Image (tube, rainbow, N blue to C red; front, top):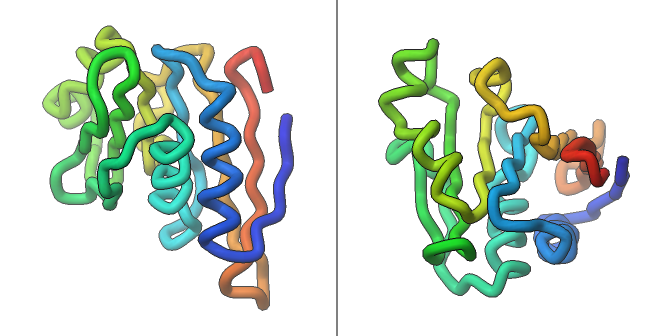
Amino acid sequence: MKFYHSNNTEETEQIAAQFAKELHSGDVIAYRGPMGAGKTAFTRGLARGLGLDDPVSSPTFALVHQYGSGSNALYHFDMYRVDGFDDLYSTGFFDYLDFGGILAIEWSENIEGALPPETIYVTLQKVEDAPDKREIIIEGGGRF
């Protein structure tokens, strides 16, 4: 398990960019944390750390955004509106598991039962009385 303190969005992105250097094609990252905790900021840092220049935004309405291609792709999911297996199936999620690349999943709590056993969990928590600060915990995947 790795534990980090972030004082602002830029530090959250830097932590994610460093973390990206430890990732491999096929890794699944499941975010945990409340709305506004920094999940999309973390994904921006991941993209930068993977050498991707695409602008990163929340996939709330699209459900998934793809940055890059092939084994270097980053697939950014938002499962906030997913309610049950039928909804999950309609996102194409299971196909993406076979594409290679890296999956980063916001609101992973909604699909907990469908995540592979080697999933890496990134928990982002707001620090009470410090609106810009975050605690970040990375664990799982057999490596953290």
